[in-house]
Length: 321
Image (cartoon, rainbow, N blue to C red; front, side, top):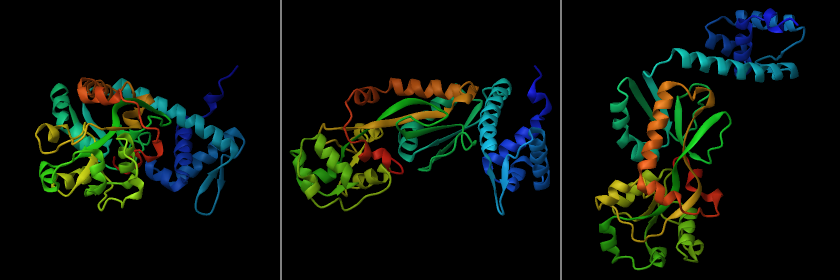
């Protein structure tokens, strides 16, 4: 039986896959460094060889036909695997490793440890970007991500790193100012910082009722780093991860007035495209960061806690937990 691929040039498949992914001949031309006419000619030649249309030509864009949809899925999967294999063959443990992460995890937990990775792997330059946006790893937006969620992202390999936990954090000066906190109930009348729903969950974990009937916190931000910064300035009590703020707690700049920690479903994960798992710089970082997480006693302590039955209100639903 003859090989049907023998009569289909790989260059035409590559052009088709790019046009299908971008839904535009013009944008495909830009990505491939070709003219729009050349893209159109390659697609037309492929359609003639297959004897069926792959695109509907619309005034300002193109849309895949049913046959085009089938071929697009197969072409994307095949070319992604081919790219990854070639990269694995030619790439050494060198170059730039781009990491996208949320602000709290990247700035408070990862960044202070990165020097150890760079000492162990001096030929890898790390570029760290802290953002609340979910970067498309499959599209090459970054090599890997440290992000919050459940670890369920199509096409990505995910490794659990850190549990999502929050507790009350205050500055010693704030405790003196309000005369201390004897019971969790005392926080109902104290100056609180953060999202009302998350406070209700912490009160739930502490066994305190009636939190939903109280006025909401007077200050909230889209990142716990900003909220805890306000607590450090003595402006109130904030919710934050005792894992991320371990240094401030050890130095006495923050205090946990109660040993009550709310543990949420999900957590923080290391994620990267499955087909790039063997790329050396990615594998090196994966092994290193997983070892860092395994060596952190706070991670082991809080990961063993049972999560609250309230996934929709988890702090991971915010832009930057």
